[in-house]
Image 1: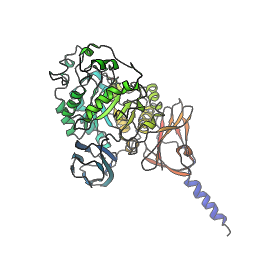
Image 2: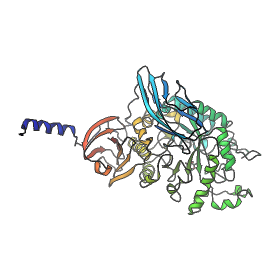
Image 3: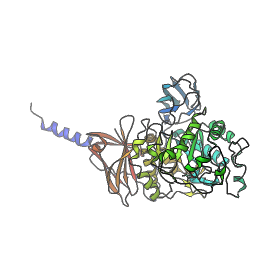
Image 4: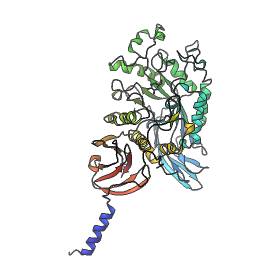
Length: 526
Ligand code: GLA
């Protein structure tokens, strides 16, 4: 058969047009000074943004708020919701209790004047909880020692008023300084450490812990707190040593859903005093690392996990010991839902980028219900007690959020929730970006290539696509290339810009983009 030359030329043209080889250079670029908001405003029609999977233990209270954007009023419903659970049509809250372990596949529906949306939702009733990383707020990076019940309530209110609850943000976590302090002269931090039965007492700033938990739950959110396996927390407040059982019980009685457990003053030598003396209360120094012995590092975390497991309540367990003894190798074994891999983050490029980009290699230890934690988010108004804006540039903030989502890290907002500006809100409300963090497969990204300051990080998603970050750690704009062969892909693929929520086109063999200084282009490749 003879080929018609005009037909061949036409075919070639179609081929050339359908496969982009050009370098992607987004038009609405972010600069070091212009805080360009990339996240499009949510549409008025419903969109369900909750993670597609949720773990719960049998016999524990169920609380899950279906996160959905779109015009209100919205009517929620669910198909195949197992017996024992109830979905409130107006609020989208699922409550109740499951008694029979198993996997339940539910379809969630949301409907308003503008249209409807549905999403598959797997409820996994068994021993594992926290199947996707926790998303919420923590008081430390903004308020530090100045946290109070009013500030926690205001943060919870703002989580709802800002609309962030509709993007899946859930936990309101009190860090250090809800307990009584050993050294402070501030009367609002003083008082008896425990009652006569040994039960922990909050400081006078937290008059009603149960009331506070009820208040937060009443908003459809969850609540967390903080302690140490040592006698004292890092801030010199009362810790849990030798009171783990009582403390776990108290947290559950109050209704807490999350515990951050911070090594601080713990030392293996304290174990000699367990149950026989209170000499440990005299310990004044910050313990730090006093051992390289893995058993000794694991022990205090096992003690508290077992106390938490005995409670009729699901409590997410967040290990904080700064990465000692390669905690990523055994954090899951001691029942940690996450474990801090480094020291504390600060809101500057050096700290954030060093922590974020040093996570390579840890990906093999993460999976559903157990995650590496590169520390809390440093965007918005922060200051550890003296509020001021983050010192990260706009591009650095896009890098921060993109990298943490690729790392499948817990996302804990560290800023004053009552002072969220539009740029920060945009950073925290991009559903396509957050979906990278909350993907049910819960795979953590690894670095797939590095060329000087230019790095490509990628993770596999449950639908078979890849989330890919093209990062430029250098001081001037550069073209970063993601080779498909590095992702295990061949041929031509559709590429979408996740921050801008726009399809870019189809690319063959590789995708390249111009990336600003300290910036990122985050894409998903199908
Ligand atoms: C340590 C932790 C921080 C914070 C403080 C509280 O430094 O790493 O995240 O919890 O203690 O004192």
